[in-house]
Length: 159
Image (cartoon, rainbow, N blue to C red; front, top):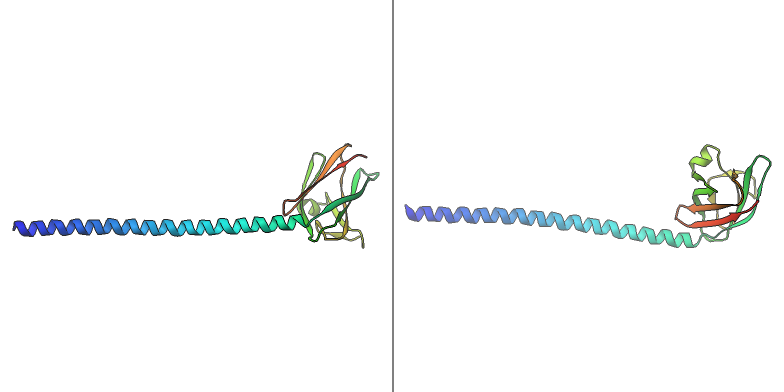
């Protein structure tokens, strides 16, 4: 009888150890697979950042001319000498901030293609001149354009 009890105790200890080992292995596999997915996501995000920066380097915006009309509207003529279209995401005129496309939808800011005078989306196409009409500020002030690729362009305006 004593011999049977010893074998039974030894079997349950082995079974318990195998169960703990199985749980540990399952947790390790889950951790490794989740870590691999996170690294893959971070690598793709890093690649997206590099692509956006490369695109931003090919956006060369230049403030060619500006004036203020009698209605206190500021007319900015912006030329993109780069190879990539510049999608404007934010426009700052002095302390006023205009988020695109909401500012265009609500009529606060107007983008016009100079070649045909038609209103356009808040984009400055490559090798094109665009007129941007926005409320003016007290001079002198800075005009800041931030593109979707996080390229920043700053001009000092004195009227």
